[in-house]
Image (cartoon, rainbow, N blue to C red; front, side):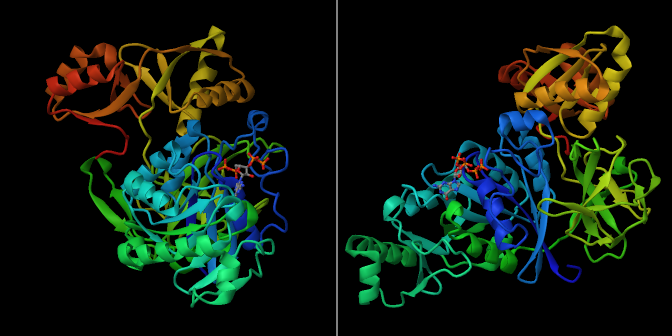
Length: 530
Ligand code: G4P
């Protein structure tokens, strides 16, 4: 795969829209798995990522993983993201490591809550999006309604590339707007040899016969509307993240999947420039790292524990941004300035991980981590820089941690510190108190932390609900004002693991009052503010 241009992408969707099915089919077309069903087994467990009993019990995919395969002269890296909303922070961070995204929509439902939230993250970064309206083998919304929904909810211009003819039991297939052909749904079972019907003349008898009179009338009307109302696909606008090519089909039936993969292989951007802060970081000077730079750089976007139950290990996933990484190379962890030799860098396939000899920009490598790495850590060949834009998002639920066995205070501290550094949960300390607060986006995160503290650190904690509903990182212009702010709101002050000041509040009203009282203080929803 060395010479192939990288396409590093992820799928976003609301749970049940078909992300797992799509992943499986993409891997199938990519010829990584020989039969469908290898990613998700029949019981609904995830063969690749069932790293914890809990995940199996619940049948949800908690952590992200990477799947790589060559396709159409591209090295495709598909980064899996957890569908469950409680782990959406994990997904947000995975989105910082990709160059493009596939948005899956359940066509009976339109854009659902989780997709909307994830799209907001993509829009923040202008990530190019390909859209797939799934489940057309079932009754679906009218395609214009779906387009309208995507355009309104996600603020992005849609350009249909194919057009569905009917849906549910009436689903005939899709009309390819550029080639003027129809791909028949009936014959979709063998995805490698679809039945393509010439539809350059929609009045031709074979089309009338295939589509049927009513649906043909609707198709003709729809095509006229498209011609009048819809813009042409424009690669530049796609790459700028303001236009999304849209496909219709059924992942379960392998229908329309190959076209999506072809689009990624043709148009998905390769690795681009990324911003870094230069040392000393307080000066807030930045530069752009270009993938063609000779020296290796990369950042940790994900730390995953217990990937392989046999080994009980932690793997840090590093996105390579520039240069070339070679196995055994010594690299600098910019946060500490220390050199680390990476002897066994891992690359991932659908089911397997294997030691790789090299990695280039766009690649994802995994390295074993004994608890020293943090999300956002930057690796270089000596330069002290810090990749930006790998934020933590303000948690929305909070718990106070109480220790059952007071002799285990140290273990608890260590466990909480490590789990927060690897991004499982966020840890805050209260002002003038030793009290620890855990913050999460979803309640299941607490369960994971509780379980892992017991399993890996042998500490039992008690977790008490906390009547706070939000937190903001604050930037205070002067030391004097900082003192004033902290003394005025001492009960609302907390510090994150890097010691930055945060304002924790019970109601939006409290936040508003503080913002009004201290107009010059800035309040941030993510911790990557400058
Ligand atoms: P997710 O990862 O986004 O949560 O979705 P997943 O792929 O697990 O799909 C959710 C359900 O939707 C599954 O059914 C799956 O078979 C079904 N599905 C996915 N794509 C299509 C499609 O194109 N057409 C139809 N009709 N169904 C589709 P399930 O019954 O919940 O699970 P399973 O028992 O089939 O695994």
